[in-house]
Length: 313
Ligand code: C5P
Image (cartoon, rainbow, N blue to C red):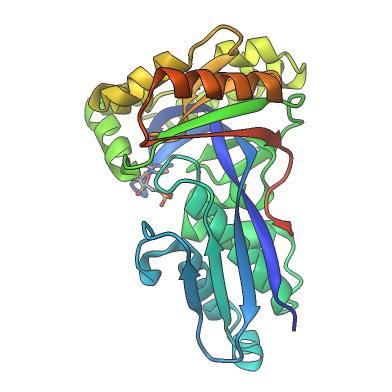
């Protein structure tokens, strides 16, 4: 049995729209997700014991039982008890590069990598749809983390339609390292504020979700119209997070510089990204933002759009 080293890219949302409530307590969403090449590295190494052991190089990580990567391993052992009993558990090492609680699906990517890694290590031969079904039981963003690239996501975020990505774009990602935003808080606050506007009729919800497929942002992506993609970036959760965290709103303003195609908060934040046409532009914007905001807590990264999900390194 081999050890596997996997790369899990971060995701950003080019579009995040909350369209209504679901019977399971979640929200009906319409999103366009995009992988970007800022990656965590996950090692899955057979340990010949009836256990999984999780190691992580970040002090910010929650205890193993609350960690999505660990939960992914437990799900695999419960689903494939024969393979687990015969071949044993694994030491799982997380090398974090994606900031935590950032709206970049870092934890989701780690869980997706564990599903892919154990599938390979145990020789289960699961295909991507099967891995994505398992992933959907662990969290709404995890099916996308398995396949990555550019995709329309509806339902809880787990129903995916891959689309041809735009031409090679770059992002500058910016996050105050000590600032974390709770995703349940952001969604629940949105419901308190806007829940009275949610359509109750399932046909209306379905038609709102279907609209994205022929909408202007998908058209801009398919036509590789980068300027238009920048203009159309949209995230409903900005209405909740920006007023509560003024430094995120100020960061967004600081990133709106000449040459930047568009700026948006990703997911439930607090990461903000600036869309740029080239690596050079992204590097210039990163330098300018660093010069303008002289706060050592501000983390800045540049990354290209990425066309895939979990990769074997
Ligand atoms: O699915 P996941 O565990 O990533 O979701 C985290 C939280 O985000 C949920 O507990 C819920 O509060 C909120 N959420 C939601 N509707 C979705 C996805 C997430 O309300 N479709």
